Length: 242
Image (cartoon, rainbow, N blue to C red):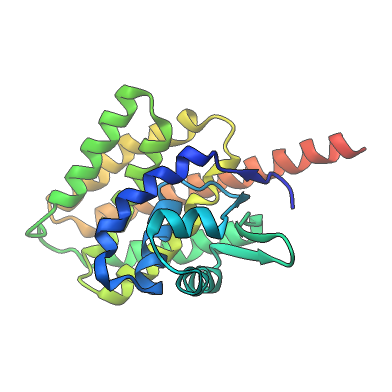
């Protein structure tokens, strides 16, 4: 498995803060929720091995509970188990990236299209735009990517559907696994911050079709950039092995 890395021991210390959120109701689903969020935030990049002892100790859960959480995330295609080697954060193929964006376009454009008057609460979208601007000022491109992902999660949440929220949560967590191919994360993430503002403004006007007209090219452009990055990486790998 290429591009595999172990996370430094001190990275797991941050998980200890998640223990309080689990409390006495520590279950495999809650553990999976924590790990899914961490993956979506880029805390565990693709190819990372997730050692049971370190993670189980940081979260204060049993080995059996953690393994069940791993099974949940493996079913969601976020993790992969390799015999005699352990559990790893997945590396997606370019075909999977194309499929992800196809599904995103169906969901996000449909949600935007249904907006016919200013939604009563766009504060969550505004907050992610603000977080993105702050990340850009700090030149923290991973944080900007996280704010961008959360922006799209909150956009989908305008549908008011728990099921759509769950689907988008899984899609966007997988999407974080894709961003690692971008050699220049600033060049990739920064232009979409401006486009997020344009989409937000359209939604504030209650112009759902206008927001949809912005979203379509937005997603097409992002997909084209990612596919190109995958092609370039494959070409580089071929040169190294030839």
